[in-house]
Length: 328
Ligand code: SF4
Ligand SMILES: [Zn+2]
Image 1 (cartoon, rainbow, N blue to C red):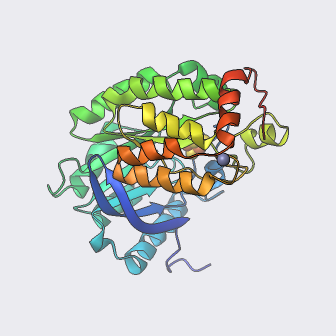
Image 2 (image 1 turned 45 degrees about the vertical axis):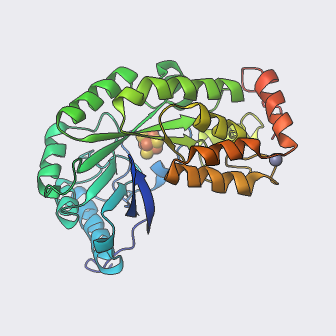
């Protein structure tokens, strides 16, 4: 095996992203790592993306070679924002060795970064060391920790997601990060399994209002059916349907803070979808709204006429709990 060449990361691309009130050119990177230590959320396929059987030294080499790929193949000079994901937790020492953390901070010195880590892997000493290397004073907030809370309900998080963290721990972590001058980007999961369309809607509305005081940014991720997951088993048996795009638009509209939202697999049976006819225009609108925060656009999306709107209204009113979807 070549132990020196570059390795292409799991994914990397450049585009535009909203950070609080600014829209910035961004580079998004997903690195293959040692893998998520928790490894059990019911909807998650990413946890299967890992270097299986590699020891720490090997993982370190393999990850550093992905950083070399970025260095050689992407022009990050032009993107002040870097979003970094690992299909797990960047600040989990079992997943990402310390020398890789240091290398990332120094490669992106002077950038604003958004980095995902589970709430239980937010050791402040490790994060502070990272920021000391990363920060050159350019950005008021040089690092946003992306925290997957999914819902503010401990019951739903435990029974429907198996996330293994608590709302209390999230609040304490957010406070600690803010005390250190860092930002919080919170992730919510819209419609985990076992909830009706209406229960899922109510859960998002409640969660957004609960977490708004702790978050500079909130990203709402509509649940999709990923391969080799518990959600996929339920879906194949007819016990799960991803949320309607109408529900997403209603949540975006009802929420006081602006929400980021990029519906994965949108318009497909495995992703959030409506009838198929109105999906493309609504998906484009949702993505545009996430970037621009244009409330007028949101109002116009609510006015879109399609026969499936009545179907959605019926489902919202009549779908019964205990996971019996009325449509597929
Ligand atoms: S959602 Fe995150 S914490 Fe849960 S298994 Fe997947 S990678 Fe791990
Ligand atoms: Zn429709």
